[in-house]
Amino acid sequence: MKVPKLELLGHWTIPIKAAIKKGNTCLITRFHPHASSLFFPNAASDFTNESIDLCDVFNKGSNDFYDRLMEQRSLQQKITVLEEFLIQRLIMNRKSHHQLKLVEDLCNHVYDESNPFNIQNLSARYGFSERYIQKLFNSWVGITPQKFFAVQRFNKSLELIRSSAESLTSIAFECGYYDQAHFIKEFKSYTGLTPTQVKML
Image (cartoon, rainbow, N blue to C red):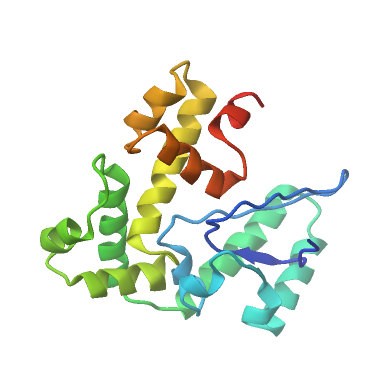
């Protein structure tokens, strides 16, 4: 697909293939799962599985930012301009830091969870309703806590496939999948490839 000059990507939970033409440079900022909402006015769920033109979010401010970015000659100068833009957005978009800390704690708990995800346990641990936790995740992270757990489990399995000599069956059980069929189905839903195909790359 043709992408805008300033592209905003949310969480992707479906396979996507990205390519860049030889001779082009791509400058990417990656946010913690819960932190992107500090910089943008929309709920994070508005960007899930979407490629958004930043100009549609910030209008004229995005064009000015892009012009300044392209005027810089070195990569370090471009990074400085990018940092200034993000700090400015952070100041302007004063969201609840109390909520941010809570969402960060929830994300860390889900990330560290080795057992199958259970939102009832998360609700009981933090003293908030399941509905409120779901709402927080949709607003700040862009996906449900169940989906966030599945993404973290997939990321762990991908890392092990690339770095470990363990069998795929062992990796599946280590990452908390019910069985190898479950592992293959979920892995393919994110990559379009089976674990075996990725291991052979």
